[in-house]
Amino acid sequence: MYTFRKDMIENRNYYLPFSFPVLLLTGEKWIISDVPSNYLHFHNCWELGICHDNSGELAFINDRTVPYGAGDIFFIPPNVPHTTYAMPGTPSGWSYLFFNPRILFRDKPSFTSFVPRSRSDVSSYRIPAGASPRSSFLFQVLIEELSLAKPDLDVAKSYLFCLYMEISRSMEKGAELCSAPPEEPSPEAGPGSASSSTLSIAPALDYIEENYMNKISVDELASLCHLSTVHFRRVFQNIMDTNPIDYIAGVRIMNACNLLHSTNLSILTVSEMSGFRTLSNFNRHFSEMMCQTPSDFRRQMLSGSTEKRPDMVEYKGWL
Image 1: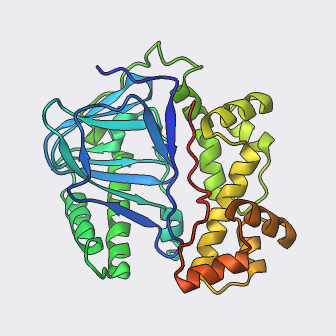
Image 2 (image 1 turned 45 degrees about the horizontal axis):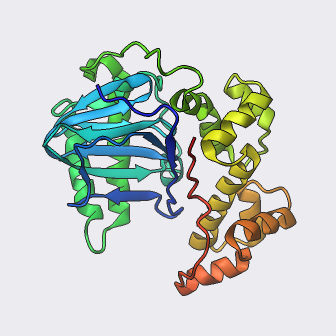
Image 3 (image 1 turned 180 degrees about the vertical axis):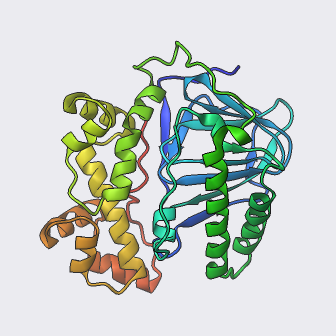
């Protein structure tokens, strides 16, 4: 079993446009190496991956691993530390979809975001090849549609919604589709390890993503994680490389950027929908993070300009 550093975890935070919050990574460059990374990483959105060839392992916290092979599908929730590596001498090809179902399917009244049974039951993230033929078919046609020069986003959205619901059902069945039983936690992954700490603040990260538009207190976040406020602040700063208040502001500004870019809503309305209680507070945070006013940002987006500006969602949290 490969041993990963317990003192290092990377936060890969993707910018997903509000109009179509989906990122497809596919093709020859997305080859999983047989040389394991020495650290885990986690994302701010759902990760959906399918292995096209060869085999390997996905590694999670507490030295838990889940094997994969050609045709397997993995559906990993946000804020779950993991990494992927192929067997020696057999690099494997993958396709990945990163998406935000809460935003993508916001127009479907009956939709509720799927909540995984447990982040520790990592074997439930795998759907073995052949276990769900409809999932495999939907994933393939979705990749084909999004790979077109001019994809039909309405068609792609329909495919992804069906795929999401199909996989959600499969994950809810849990053990029926899992061939790898949960392993006992490794004694090396103690409460002071990066992976353990990342898992401890995952409820707070989830809550911020779902409730950024509302008032959020640090005490409330600490309570969700069953930590004291002082300890929560320290752990959060170590993992995310920023404090909870600034992180919340960053998530709100990210959503404001999406609204400014994809809607004609007034700046006041955008600020309110993004969780800012006053327009002056919104303008101040926006200017500090984006180095321009909301109005200038909107004009720049409409003009198609990509002049240098900071990407406030690129939090690189290292321990």
